[in-house]
Image 1 (tube, helix red, strand yellow):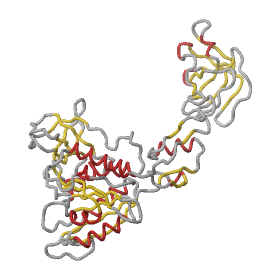
Image 2 (image 1 turned 90 degrees about the vertical axis):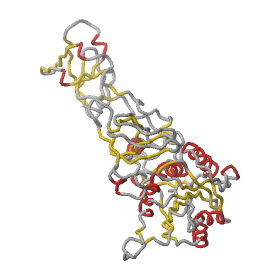
Image 3 (image 1 turned 45 degrees about the vertical axis):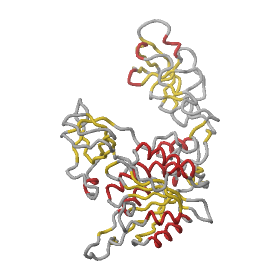
Length: 431
């Protein structure tokens, strides 16, 4: 991160912001504060989920040679041009992957060849073995069964030597790691894992394992948010629970900014008397905004935490209600963390919305964006159908556990009838 955003984030603004405006402001905040995380080299087996730090140029062509794409017989495709009916070729040898045949095929000759074997000199076509008849050292097949050049993989068909194999900012998933392995790479340069500090606020919070007490609830947000952050390949700095004390929270946030690239708090961002996050943030950094025209998740804060010893950290203050915290994280914090971690901006942080039909009439108030928990089910030959969860309370986390989708109602959308089409955000891969 370089420098803190200035007055463009309207500290203390009271008007509810459109979801699209929140996305724009967070993107601006991240762009201003984004820094290049240090680079480290790791073994390929330890690189899953990491972000590539440097462009990888292919040191070799992949595949390195023309090879057979099928088990069959290699021959010169020109043999298909002469005559009609069957082609008869003299089989002069055998090649398999890792054991190339070193001769040269002449006119009227074929080579028995296995998938992956180097194509012999003089051959450019493979006829699959199941289309052939063999008699002693002869192979016969209908010339209409195969076209010249068929079933041959060309050298460099996947990658050319010296060409770009993977661009910096690429998340290293299973195919990417396989591609690096195909280039002979045992190690890869990646960004240092993003460090994300997580804190929950409130005198009422109990930690799992503690005995219950009147008026208290168990802290679920820290466990939920920690899992979501780890799912992005980030390291979690668990700051624990913080009581409702502006000074204590300010001290915790100041310490967090010295050891984390981003800080996430839950609770304490509404307008209650015990909501100290705003006051603490004012002491530790700069506030970006507060209220979002959405449900669940209206109270939300974003900004920076400054300190004297290192670059500032981004701050996100999420609602205390567990479902609101999850939805706010998915929509706003997740894309920001991916960009901070070094992921290419060209890669969409959220999956595209899909269209589905509602199974029941659903109430929606125009003037805010709503995200209703639902179960999407496939219908053969028709659009999928979504069944809304019985409870949409932002405090009912069990309804989130049972959902595989969120129905996305745009800002100006009103209520819908049964069978109406709606946009749906699939949760698979996000939670």
